[in-house]
Amino acid sequence: MESALTNPLFPKTQSVQSPHNLGLVQKFPSNPNSVLVLHSSSNYSGVCMCFVDETVKPLPPPSQNPDLISDTDPVSTTEHRRVVRLAWEKLVRWSRSWQSKAATNDVLGRTNKVVVLGGGSFGTAMAAHVANRKAQLEVSMLVRDPQICQSINEKHCNCKYFPEHILPENVTATADAKAALLGADFCLHAIPVQFSSSFLKGIADCVDPSWPFISLSKGLELDTLRMMSQIIPQSLRNPCQPDTHWDENRLSNADKGKKMAMVVASKDKQMANAVQQLLASKNLRISTSSDVTGVEIAGALKNVLAIAAGIVEGMNLGNNSMAALVAQVHWYIRRHLCYNVVLDYNIRMEIEYLILGVFFPPMKMGAKWATMTGLAGYGDIRLTCFVNLSRNRTVGVRLGSGEKLDDIL
Image (cartoon, rainbow, N blue to C red):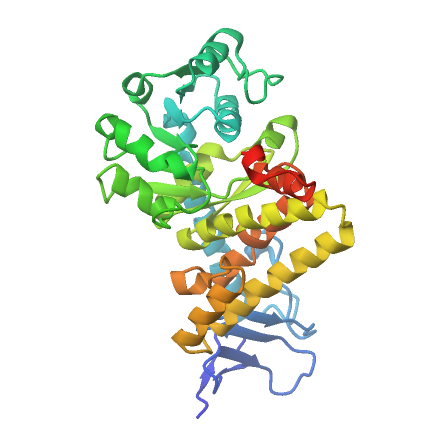
């Protein structure tokens, strides 16, 4: 049964509750050129269809004072002026509160030291990016290779990864975990997933329980199938260790002036916002998400698909075959996300093991559809498949060219 309510913003309209529980529909009784707004009251996204209503005077632009609306205009009724003034006041209050929060939440200004765990390609690129954000910021890299450590401290470059890239002077390296972690505000974890557990257990005694960890690693642990969101707190023996998870991408391009976009996921919204303020720059746009599982599963899928894309490249199958691979991957993901709510558990388990053994339904693990089809999912998959920047893709290229896996590894 529909229930009609009077809409205070548009006195000539009615708000009718949709029988499908989709929200409130604004109806104009007579004018066909009216405004139809569907406000979502469920988990579905709101839908807005707008048509011109010549009987309603548009709101003034932000730079115009509502009090200056002409009294001679017959449409400028007292009710209309009151609504405009209330909207204006709310907009001003929101703007001031946002500016106040931005001024008090100066994460980068309050940060004095950032530790990067690992001296690989992505750890080095991240250290350079963070160091460029603030000249007074101390960036310490914890590395095990003494040659890399010496190269960073003396020549300001990583002799093994990006030897041509000069690191900022505020980037230093050490093999001493206690010295590196002393006084840290943020810890960026760039150790490969398969070695993360043993590495973190070795430095657990030096880690403050309140330090936020930003995981830059992608994939699942082979023996346990654990994700980094499970490995970090369990290895540090602190189930409450704050952590965020990064949609890793070719970050080195950001320091070359290329525009990039990435995703930071955390169950703690304030933590995700803090990481966003710390790392976002004019060349790097960072979106936040609460779907930690989705971002991690998308990264694990990407690693497998990178090898498949490399095989297509190594066999010289052409761009059409590469596009077919990407399209098929998207179909698999959509199918699994859909059948998770249609088929029973036993049928789902059989299909999981039949389709390459890697396309398990992310939804069953808690991933969200928007994450898998967004930047962290489809976006990263397409970048990895079509651009030769991934180590996994390089392995696939060599496999497709006829080399043996043992020789490649």
